[in-house]
Length: 367
Image 1: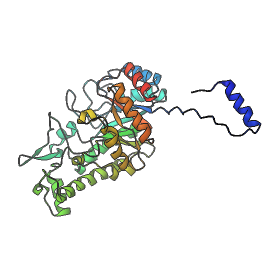
Image 2: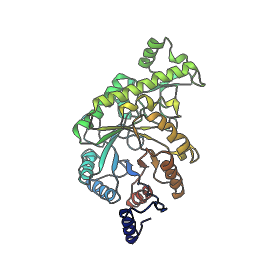
Image 3: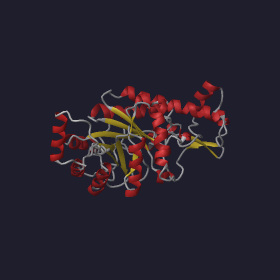
Image 4: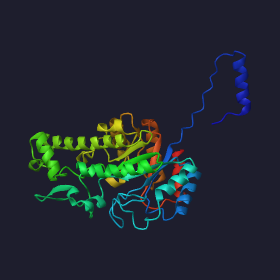
């Protein structure tokens, strides 16, 4: 609450005259608003430069600080994962974007409005790479056979995160973006496996056999064991070394962040504690509804476990942009009370961003 001007003058005069202490109670401080970051899928939002300008104008009106723009397709559907939304000399463009460089259009519009742009670059979920070289496919044990992993619910394409040639290919795309475009940061995604029973390709198996004297095909992937934990640690170290390689390949002025699964998903081989020194930000995907958890899991598990792994990296939780006001009230209250180090919320909308949605989330961030 604001005191009246008259009251403020009176207090100042009393202080100047050396009056004794008063019993007045300070007004409660207004909490600082959370920073607003938007995670934006390109194909659902931008089909022309005017689309980009309209989006950025709306973002500026609602005090958006950062836009995380998908520049390499992440999912397999109408567009194959691995296709690009910028002018790449390495990977093919997404259909309809052969002559429309969305990344450059976004940089031109956003930087003119003092909005930061991060290039969201998914990694090992990549149909283009899998088709480029079938030997790069992620291999998994399925019904006693080693076969390319094609997803759990629908047809998807993955490549082996531990294959040096795959890593070199993905690094070349990151280098292309960061050397040719004035991005403020890179957000990595899909740096993981889907379960314990992958990657079981010949190269990775041979390296593990040489290192540990065990063929991972001999492991029982269905139950916890010391041998399984050792295998998972090998894979986790490989992913961490890759993140460190990204840091070495990207100019130091460009921030690096990673979208991570909730830390309890240990079977994916992703442990932020092993690469936190190589990144500036971690964005845990705390989508409690997607994972089938009650809302208190958001703060009692997802955020707690991420804080324990983050080191000096900033945390900006990725939050579903379509929850209820009551859900947001509970989440923001707990973030303010329990996690004062969290300054930004990264709002994720799978489909079309509208100005009304931006307005709503910007207002929520101020509560």
